[in-house]
Length: 205
Image (cartoon, rainbow, N blue to C red; front, side, top):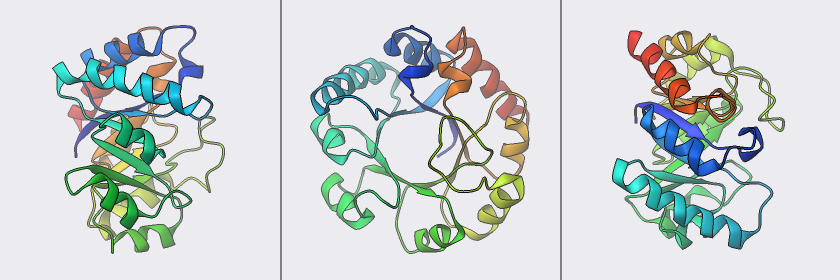
């Protein structure tokens, strides 16, 4: 895995429809899309996921569902992202199949060590920097923590948390294979331009 990874947050979209933000971001070069919904009904989540999967298909962008394996299965998503309080990886893999993208958040060093035994598609290093969009996480890893994980882990690293145009080059240099952003695109006045700018900075490193 390599590239720009958008995690959605409808609360940050400033009244813009989520589909509009996603379309702009994809045109700007987003390579992966994680649909994250914490406060909607299961029915709404499934119907929305089906619409967004159809929107992404012409661009060949994988749809990854946050936490909800049931929603991922219901909409035939390409993958799911889980944390250590979610369904255990082994069960998720059995339900989703061998081809599914399965990402796992790592918030403390024990998580990193445990992930070595799992055939996850990537680990989400969370958070790299402190961020208001993830309030239930442990202490930030920082650039040194990210570099330490890169040297140890056998998995691709998706870095998330407080990443934007001002620090993305440092994060890539520290070892991130993918850069995941939330507010840097969702809250941007022009999501397409924001995605393009971040992508360009990633390519400079």
